[in-house]
Amino acid sequence: GIMPYITAAIIFQLLQTAIPRLQELKKEGASGQQKITEWTRYTTVGMCLVQGFMWMKFMLANNMVREEFLTAGTLLVFYVSGLTALTAGSMFLMWLGEQIDKYGIGNGVSLILTAGIIAQMPNAITDLSNRTDLSLQAGEGQIGIVGILFLAIAFIIVVAGSILITLAQRRIPIQQARHTRGRKAYGGQRHYLPLRVNHAGVMPIIFASSLLIFPSAFFGYLASSVSVDAPTWWVSTLDFLNINFQMGEYPYIVLEILLIYFFSYFWTTVVFSPEDMAQQLRENGSFIPGLRPGPRTAEYLETVVERVTYVGAGFLAIIAVIPSMVSKYMEIPLNISSFLGGTGLLIVVSVGLDLLQRIEANLVMRNYSGFMSGAEPGRGGRPT
Image 1 (tube, one colour):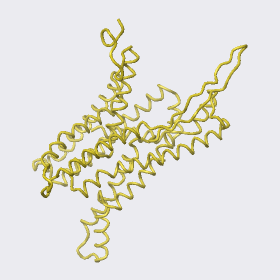
Image 2 (tube, rainbow, N blue to C red):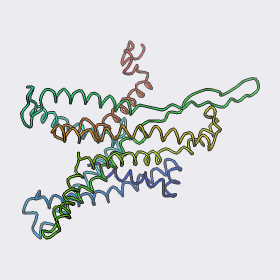
Image 3 (spheres, rainbow, N blue to C red):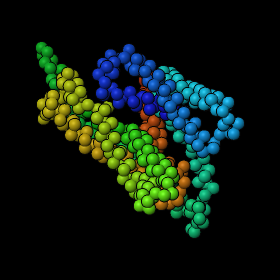
Image 4 (cartoon, rainbow, N blue to C red):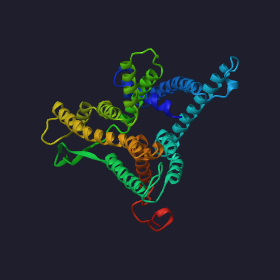
């Protein structure tokens, strides 16, 4: 899929904060960004080869390959053809995303991700309808009317909360310095600096879920490969760790929440610099009332960002653990409960809101009335 390209883009965005050469390229504008994009593409090819090889090893280990491909003469052909197909597919999606960026509306990669998530909804709805039992006493493996009502209400609440936290801002009042030229005064306007509550977006959940794959896989591997002659306490310890680091268990949930908080602060630090923002305000002749421009303003912005990030990280943690909790304690399949939270829901909500805002901006730019107002007389809402 598109994940190798996303992984490569995230890697370069993180490296821009640590490597001076990348920082210089970023400041060069379009030419520097084009160079970073070119390196990202090369890294994507490498990520495709590595992830494709791991996926093909997984297929072989789980007997998902036909026997005629397992001979000594055809195994190399299997690897070469498989890696070529997987890499070509990912590179095509990368190219398609760039074409959407260039000729379409919205972020191409985000739209491709959203389309893939929405494409899973028919299967989830079909599975839900097959498990639905509208009687008050639902059978084993069935979802009764109480469960259906809970899922519907929870879905509405979670979507509304996701929209609210995505659009939520902490507005800091800003005043522009007044300049007098001759008998006329310029500037002095008051406006605000919007700081998003969820500045990190879905990245903390992606990072946390990616890291949590390793302890569960590692402890599962140790538990399955333990020797028969191993001490009882060692076997019990491995079984305990293997069970408790599976999705939905309390140690797993606690570790996931801690990682989400950590990566929320980390990613916010990467994408937002209070010092740079304070410097930009100073250069533009703007200031926060009651604060000196410069270091004092940067300290204030840093304090505000830390507080709003705490709230945003808490919301992300709640959204992240809802699917696994519902799946575990209500015995609802994960493909159904995943639409009550997690990365997929946040991606769909954020991309949907961004797409609506871009379409609205294009309609207004072309003198259309937009979505929220009635159509004007004439073709396409234009005045005649």
